[in-house]
Structures are given as structure tokens and as C-alpha cells.
Image (cartoon, rainbow over all chains, first blue to last red):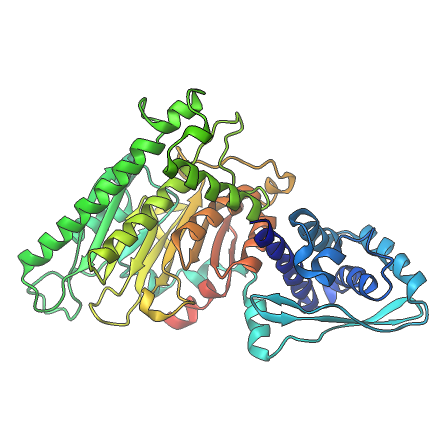
Length: 186
Length: 288
């Protein structure tokens, strides 16, 4: 169980990283900070104590549930995390170069992130193993995005065989669409 | 009320096989089992098969309700709530389900929980889904190939509404703004369609009283709150637990759920806006 939680946490962080990466310019900065921690942990070993992101991306399944998840979301949404991890990295990677994180298995395939650093500044973040276009589209599609009512209120709404809804009590059932269906199918 | 089903009774020449359903009351809700009449089957035989299967499912639901209901003075759950029985001394059923609920609590980072704020173990959030799962196993054991089980708006299917066919079951989703209309419908497929198929659909919401969602106290939840969350998954426990968890945990849990599990989600926000994963987004073009 603990192992499963750890794996899940690792996957969550990897997925969040990926989502951030693919969401484009808007989140580039915050995403980069999450990547930075894993790259630093992997290459210099100095960021391990400070960055929870290390547990999820670089070490894979060893991350605990709490640190794994908070790294992804925390770093993704807070710029202060970004700056602190950047400074950690700045010391270890002043000369710059390209750093690769450890490959992580997700439900979208194997994912590995590569960061290019010049003069302590991240200049590029690349996903190394987004194996093909299809998996990329799966990843994008896994997100819940805004949808217009008119897009779902379609002809398909007619002719259903059953009705799902927020739990109907036995009283509410009597006036529910499911009751009408059941009566029609009696 | 919009038309929700074509009248396709006998004598109308409809190509669609007639669906029959039977209902019973259990766990404070109504459970309905629908099966299509296989071609060439005598109507009376089909009715008997359906009624026998419904009786099996009803017994199963009632047995679990007797153990887990907090509304029955003689249930094991109420004895635990009163402190007369500890989890260690509880039945294997109770312990197993409690462990499962506790695992989901970890997996959902606390958004789903099996304990009320007052500390009483309340497995109501998972018992119904557990009953649906067990019922599905029973129907399989009975040899039924095509069926649709709906317990209080949570749905599990196998096969197709067309016996031996490939057509998915179409499950409508009630619009929380107007419960007499449908927001959309989601295709649920039988188990013969491979592992990626969604066989189960669960919906959680604030629309009706008596719903068991204990907010995990996640601060972000209130602002980003949802009014109704539907989750389609390969199994009913995952669908039901995640729908409940997303209701409690808000956008953060929604993100967690869609990145960890192979699910499709349709969430109705408190302001009426919709959030949907691709499985729900694909529906519109397919229909027009």
C-alpha cells in the first residue's frame, strides 16, 4: 500500500510536470522551477534536502505521498518555491549544461525531463521520452478543461438507457427521469 | 420533460430490442436492473430471468445494508458508532471495506474519507459502490451477458443494450440546474471491449439531501467548488470514490484524479460552468 501510494505520488508529480510543460508559456516559469529541483538533485546532489521534487521525479517510487504531491502542485503554483530552487541550482550549475532527470513511468508512458541551463538560468525544458504524438494527446486530454453547455447538450441526450445523477434518495426517485425510464421498460 | 426514450414496445416494428427493468428499494435509494430481451426468447422466460436476477441483487444489497447502515438500530455499523464494537472485532466484511476506504483516503490525499468529522466510521461513501460491484459479480455468475444496473444514479453495465451487439449503453447525466433534463450522455461499454473501456459511471453532488460527503477541510475547495461531479471508470469503486473525492477536494483533487486514473470526468461548477475531460468532449461532434 505504501509502495502504491509512493508510486502514485511520483506519477502525480510527473503528470503535473508534463501538464505544465504542455500547457505552454503561461506556466513555463513555474514548471521550470519544478524541473529544476529534480535536475539539481540528480546532477549535484545538493538540492536533495531542500527540494521535495527530488523524491518524485529523480528517485521515482521512493517519494512519500505527501512530498510527492506537494512538490508538483507547490512548485507549480508558487513562484517563491521557484526562486529558492533556482538559487540552489545556481550554485551547483553555474557553468551551465544540459541535465536529465530520471525516467518515470506514468500511465502516459515513460517520461523524462531535460533542462538546459546557461549561467545558472534555465533556458530550455524538454521532455525526452514523450514517446509519440498519440501519448502526448492522451496526456493533454486527461485534463478537465472548460466546456460549453451547448457542446454537451446534444442529440445524444435523447434515447438513453439509464440515468446517472447525484444520488437519488428513494423519495427523489419517484420524480426522477430514471423512474420514467424504469416505467417505460417495465 | 424531454423525451428520453423512444417507445419501442412490441408491435411497433422497432429494430431495437425491448429493454425490461425491475426495481427495488435498498440503502435509502432505488436500485434498477435492466436487461434486453434476447431475440427469439419467449417474453415470459425473459421476464423470469430478469426477476430472478433482480432478486439475487436485492438480497445482496439488503445483506450489506444490514451490516453497514447507520440508520438501522441493529447494524454492525451502528454498534461501532456507539463504541460497542471496535474495528478489530468487526466482521471481515467491515474490516475489508474499511481498509479499502482507508487506502482510497491515502490515494486521494485525504479528499475521500471513511470517517465523519466526529470520528465515527462511516463507510456510506463506499458501501453502495461495493454493493454494485458485488452485484455485478453475481450477475456474471448467473450467466447474464447484457445488463445495466443503476443504484441511486450510479451505474454499472456489461454487454450491450443490443444482445450480442457492440452498441454501448448510453447513460444520461442529470443536469443539476434542472433535474428534469439531461446534461449529456456517456457511453458505457461491456467487458468484452477491452481494458480501456469504461463500464461504470458514478455521480456525486449537492443536489439532494442525505448525501455523504465530509469535506476534508481542504481550504481551496470552497472557492473552486463543484455542484455535481460525474466520473466514468473501468470499475464502480474508482468511479464512485473519485466522484466523491472531487466533490470534497475541488479542483485540486480533480487534477489529481485525471492524472492518476484512467477516468473521464464531467464536473459542474457552482457557477454553472462545466469542466470535462476528452471522453465527454468527444460526444458533441459525434452527435451532430
